[in-house]
Image 1 (tube, helix red, strand yellow):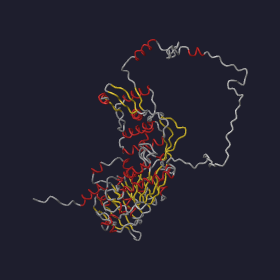
Image 2 (cartoon, helix red, strand yellow):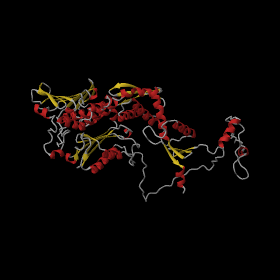
Image 3 (tube, one colour):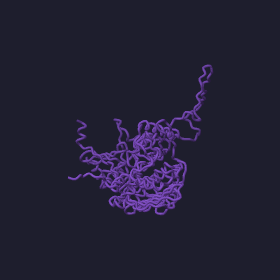
Length: 610
C-alpha cells in the first residue's frame, strides 16, 4: 500500500498562504506600502484601476534592491529583518515574515522595477502565478516600482467573491488612511483611474489628521501626552460635542503600526462616560510607543491584533491620560471659587464697633388710601360671584352653562353618553414620558414611544425614497459639510436617494458639499451630523444593493427626527402613534432590530398578587 502523505507544490502552498495574507486588493495595498516604508521611502505613490482588480501599483523612492535581493524577495519566508528567534521580540519594522510578496505573486501577475542609489542599472522582474517569466537589467529611478495586475486571475472562486468596485475602493482608502495617519513625515499621493484623488504632503501630526478627516476637526482636537516606564502615549481625542453615533474616527497605533484593541477602546469610552450621550462614540487618534519586547504583533496574519504584556496598567494609564486632557481643556464641568465678582466676606474683628442698620419708615403711610381723591373702588357683587358654588354641606355645585360652546347636536350628545358608559373603552397611559401602556385582551402592553416613532418614520421615509416623493425645504443659509475621502467616495452612490427624500447637495470641491435644501418633515436637526451618520451607516454595512442603502438612509433620518424620551404625549397623539405603528407590517421591532413592544400577560400580573 503506497504512502498517502506528500508535500504540497510551492504554487499551491503559496496560494494557501495568500488566502491568509491577501484577502482583497486593499490587502495588496497594505503590504506594498508597508514594504515601501520599511525601505525608507519619503515619497509613496499609489495607483489603482478598477478598484484594484486590474492594477495596484506602488512607486517609492526608498533604498531599492539588487538583482539578487529582488529575486529572493519573492521566495517564501525570505526576509531581511529576522536572523534569529530573538528578533521576533524586538521588531521595529512593518513586515518581517516574508509572506507578503510570494503570496501576492501566487495570485496575480507582478512586475517589479527596482534600483539602488549607487547602481547604474536596476532590475526588471516579471512573475505570474509564482513563476518567474523574465528577469533583466533595466533603466529606472532609484527605489522600487511594484505593479500587481489582475488579482486572483488564477483563482476564479476568490475573484468572484470580491465586492463591488465602490466597496473595494473604500477598503483601499481605509487602509491608506491608517498608514498616512501614522506617517505624517511621508509624502503620499493616490491616483484612481488616472485621476489624482488624494495628495498628502509631509506635515506635522495634527495637520496630517486634519488633511485626512477634514478641516472641521481642527477645533475639535484635544492633545494628550503622557510618558511612563511602561508606555509613552501621545495623540489627540475629540471634544465631547464631536462624538458620533456611527462611524467615529477611532484610531490606535503602536510603534508606528495600526491596531484594533477593544479593551483600550473601553478605556477611552469610560473617560467620556459622563460627557456624551449613551450610544455615541468619541473620536480619537492615539499613538503608543512601547518596548517591542512587551508586545506580540504576530498573533494575526494582518498584524492588526496586538497583544500587550501589561494590558491592565496601560489601560489605567490611557484612561487617566484622556481624563487629564479633557479636564485640562475644561471639558469636564468644575466649580471655580476664584472668580471675579465673588462675595467679599470681611474678617471678624472683635474690637470693632459695628453700627446696626438703620430702618426708615413713614408712619403716615396708609396703603388703603389712594393718591387721587377721584378714585372710586369698584362695587363688586360678591354674593353673585359665589352663587351656586356652595350648599349646606360645603361641597361644590357646578353650574351648567346656558350655551353649548361646542354646539353639539342631540345625536352627538347621545353618542358621547353611550361611549362614557362603555366599560371596555381603550385608555392609553404614558409612563415616565418614555413608555405607552395600553390594555389588550391578553394583558398589559408596553410600547417604547421613541422606537415606535422610529419604526413609523422609517417606513415613511423609505416609501418617499422609493417613490421620489420627498419634499425639499430650501435652506436660508446653506451649511457646509466637509467629508473624509472615504465618506466622499460614497456620495455618488447615495446622492439620488438623498435627493429623493428632500436633500439638495452641491459639490464645492475638496470633499466639501453645500447643503442647500433639507427634507421638510425634519426640524431642529443637525443635518451635518445626520449626513455623516447616514454615510457612516452605508459604509459600515458595505451595501452593494441599492435597497440596503435606502433602508440605511431611512433609518438614519428616522433616528434623527423621532421624538426623544421625556416627550409628553397627549391622548390623541398616543392613539395616533399606536394606530400608525400597528399599520406597519413590522411593528414589533425597529429596522435595526430593537424591541418596540413588550407584553405583560394576565397570568404574570396575577402571580404578582399571590
